[in-house]
Image 1 (tube, helix red, strand yellow):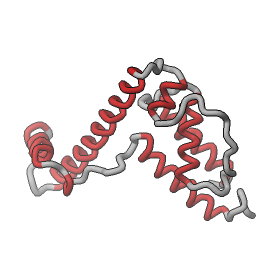
Image 2 (spheres, one colour; image 1 turned 90 degrees about the vertical axis):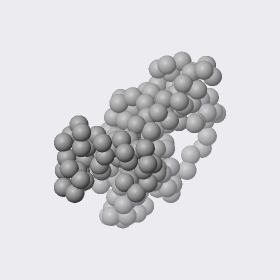
Image 3 (cartoon, helix red, strand yellow; image 1 turned 135 degrees about the vertical axis):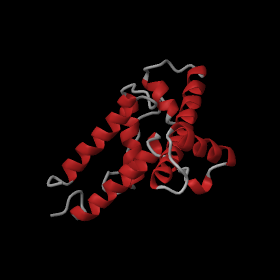
Image 4 (cartoon, one colour; image 1 turned 135 degrees about the horizontal axis):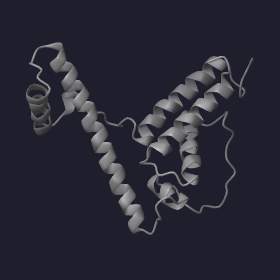
Length: 169
């Protein structure tokens, strides 16, 4: 039976894509993930030294490889957090009050007081647009995009949406 004018499988694929896009947009994942192949020389040295001297792994063993991969991912998350902190500070300097929807919307790059607009149906917009609307909805509550409450709001919203669209999941 079609859901939102599409088959359930197609809708699940769209929602899964939206959630993946959401991870990219909320900073839970990075748009350009750090991998061992794209680390700078300094980052590689820091990671290798940490894995050997702090964690105690030796080059060539599985523990060393796992350590390097994990720390490369952690560096990407750190970089994302730093970018988010900079945007948050810029919005605060522009007059955004912490905990306000205006501040949260600024961090997301959305206008705070845009006039209500006629939105396209959720059945025809892209998964990225669905995710963006979820983010904006959470931001309108004044949840800081850098806070876990914002990520939880987005995740819970997406979970509820998935359950509504695909009840047997």
